[in-house]
Image 1 (cartoon, helix red, strand yellow):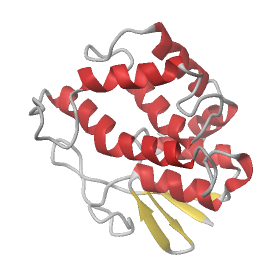
Image 2: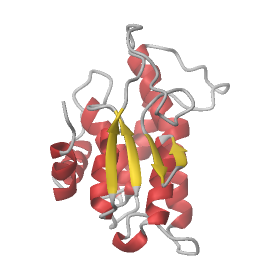
Image 3: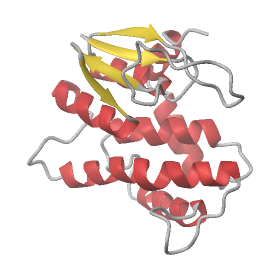
Length: 198
């Protein structure tokens, strides 16, 4: 049984979506976290080392950080084909886009959101103005980031784009809007939203 350590309406909400896509048995444990304003507290029940969400446990085995959770769950529950298996041609691209999400895309979005300048050539990630053309070029090749196949990669990127689509720093793109619509119109997305309290 998977336990999702969850705070409603946060990044962990996307894992309600993914778990529903995977038809995985799971339960949700609501936890407290520290808030941006300094209020709140780390929940001792949460296995994330910094008390953040998302985190999961699989019969007591903890997994944390979005890309790691996505990879773990798609390897653990492969029947619906939401991740590429070892030896399959898409395994390399699948791992690359998961790593790009954690190591490049999310830091670039947060840097832009927080108005932090990304030093060229010295940061481990690029500015969002360099990242978005890469992602848009990839989406021009197919409806999803792995081409024709919807995957856990799209859960991560699609839900992030949905959150920031109307922000001042996200490019206005019909391609991006159509991608978000494809991702968020899936029945499992609606089921995940219905299970997200608050």
